[in-house]
Length: 555
Image (cartoon, rainbow, N blue to C red; front, side, top):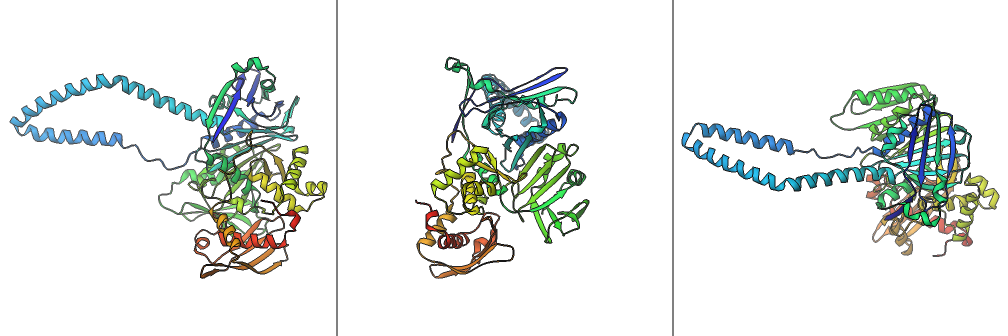
């Protein structure tokens, strides 16, 4: 997928003895987005933006070892062994010496002839490293200006970690001109070194440069044009994160010292065998307890009391990515952990006062956000017609940020309809759920509408569910609302000569919170990769039987 960017100039940080000016160059091809203000909290911002950098460069995928040096050493050992044998046989030694002399001469001639090739190859490798290294900084950071905050978003190289830094307007003083919107910013790797020069005794200004949108057509030749073939997985991962953040989760508040202890334990130990997991043992009104496998080491957090109403144990993997939070420990008031379930994604939110830093981790490092998780299938799935969806989105754009209840009251629509419309725009990359403030925000991930035919969330299982509905093999056998207001469904799905018995719970926000099925796929994966086609078919059958005709989509 090709993305086109146009920058009038490079982003830069100008640092002097008394002042630091940060100027981000926005994409001039996008809707005008700008901001100007001076920071009040310099040190906290420096640590937070540096943690965002740590997300960008994070890559914990396994890389094979380079065994070239070992093979060269082994070849040298073989030559030494043969030399010792030849020394014992004088006649063979003379012949070997003659051959070695000829071979060295050939090697010298070959090296001289290939010297130009080796130099060009090394230059090419250096170019690739610099080009790819910078591309991650150019592609990943997305900056959004809203009436109440400015926030940055990025992805890690292995696409398993998501970072979001939200900076409230109270962090700034002397706020100047700003225009709401989302844009890509030119973010070179050298900016990180400049960020480290931010000091509390310096006046620090942050600017998303509006002048890039005011240059006349005659100046377009001076723009820096960038055309990048962006992987579909990067875009789809962003969309999956947005869907996962809106799902219900067990919430744990951790004291900064508890996060320090987690990082300390992981720094002091290196596991040689599995399982490489952390188990959150949660008991209402008791301190949070974390067990580290495979050592069985228990960490009790006396400063962090679990305030939930249900006792449970939640196991998460990919724990070394938590080291990204280390720089935030001295400046954070507390950390809030949102745990979606065993082997499911988790979100760590650092409360920095008027700033928040959110680290989203996929179920485990190899299980990146794009390829294995289908959390959009767990999100609200109410069928809403195109006109109503557009009406909801246009209303959201009026204020840029709003709660679903406020939108429903203002438009005179049912809350489930509003949530269904917002979920559709979230899955299209045009809106995002902010769990810190409990609101939906407008966030256009790209200038043009995303090609959903390439980024479709409807995967093979959802296609299979639609096929089961067409074959009329889905039946809802039980449907009722429990004491928590959740809809509990049970049914049967017949596929050829075999029958499956799916069941699920949908909360008041139309989100799937529990599900079960007798099929082999669900027994192996549970909800870690989304629901199976039988669970989806049961949900879709129930929606068809209860949704009024005027709310059904026309396809």
